[in-house]
Length: 340
Ligand SMILES: NC(=O)C1=CN([C@@H]2O[C@H](COP(=O)(O)OP(=O)(O)OC[C@H]3O[C@@H](n4cnc5c(N)ncnc54)[C@H](OP(=O)(O)O)[C@@H]3O)[C@@H](O)[C@H]2O)C=CC1
Ligand SMILES: CC(=O)[C@](C)(O)C(=O)O
Image (tube, rainbow, N blue to C red; front, side):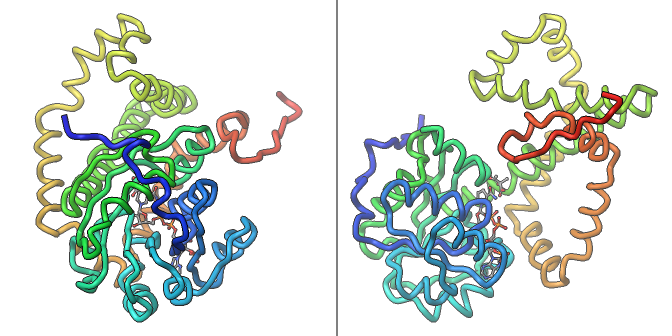
């Protein structure tokens, strides 16, 4: 087993007296900034004028243009959208670099040479293995999201100490951190989000939903069966593996799992996964994503429109509106129709 790092492995005072500039205040940025502040770290935010700037100010942070935040910091954590990073780095971060440590939460731009850091600075990543809003929510629950960390360049000899102190400050060492490389983090993160977590899962859920609806079953029933219940099943796997989930479901469901699962996700699926991984490893995915953004996202925007109008999304919106507890973190007034 690889070595996992936990709270006791970090020099928790390493960031004392140091200023961390979090560049970006979105999914990851708001979580890192708020968690670090509560861990006693001096945090400033680097942004452009806009909704994030207003939100960060409302959350009590000192917000500066990216260059100014970079210039005053000892550590710069870039939490901008991957496709925005090269331009902002070139125009606003690089000109303000002296000896700051440069940090990322995903290795994409360094690994695919969209950002070439100076040889004079520590360069590292701390990548929580989970959505930013859960990095924040679990921190508040005295828990944390596990993270990967990688050292790309260690000029000071302190890069690993910084990585562990940072992972501690955002709460990830409560769950554990694993050392990796920029290449391994980038390739596995892209693969996981494409073939399993997001791409694979949404395709499977939609296929299941469409199969039931096309066979004449009620869309609401198909939603509950193929999407809503998924969280309940995955929660059991999260808590105790597939064994725990299988313990909790019926033996009928377990038998169905064993005899039908491999028919749905058969050998062809694994072959497709290997092709997806190869596209990532050989840079074809990265090239396509970079070009899509350079062309101002024609395909991306069209697919978003199509996906959001899928029947499963329409049905889901209606059902979730009647289940405000589903989004307990979002304040929703319960609209109780006269017919309820
Ligand atoms: N989302 C996740 O859960 C995870 C993300 N990551 C990585 O974290 C990094 C950040 O991703 P994520 O948090 O999802 O990003 P988001 O899209 O959620 O947030 C991006 C932030 O950057 C700001 N921003 C965008 N463009 C600019 C600009 N030109 N100048 C200044 N600020 C700008 C946005 O502000 P504005 O309001 O102005 O648009 C926003 O605050 C990425 O490298 C990603 O791969 C890693 C693990 C998980
Ligand atoms: C949440 C996460 O880690 C992802 C799916 O890789 C991402 O949002 O980049």
